[in-house]
Length: 88
Image 1 (cartoon, rainbow, N blue to C red):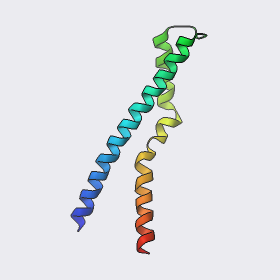
Image 2 (spheres, rainbow, N blue to C red; image 1 turned 60 degrees about the vertical axis):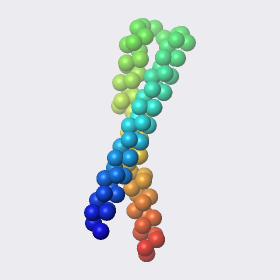
Image 3 (spheres, rainbow, N blue to C red; image 1 turned 135 degrees about the vertical axis):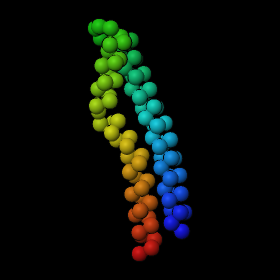
Image 4 (cartoon, rainbow, N blue to C red; image 1 turned 180 degrees about the horizontal axis):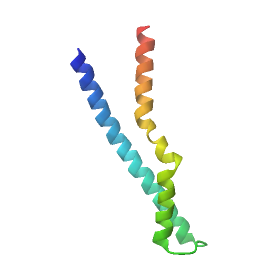
């Protein structure tokens, strides 16, 4: 019985990690593309690569990157609440 729960937790962790990585890569690529388009549109002084790297450094410190961690939190909490509600 307990091995089934451990196996479920392991598989869920692996799946959530894959989803996290996919969402993270997608979000970074969208942010980089937005920075590239903003620079190419004009009105920004300086080197293109330096501008994009500065914007990506801000992204790494930003809230959006931390919100992607909810990929782990939301399914675990919703599963726990569902199990609690169904059993009690």
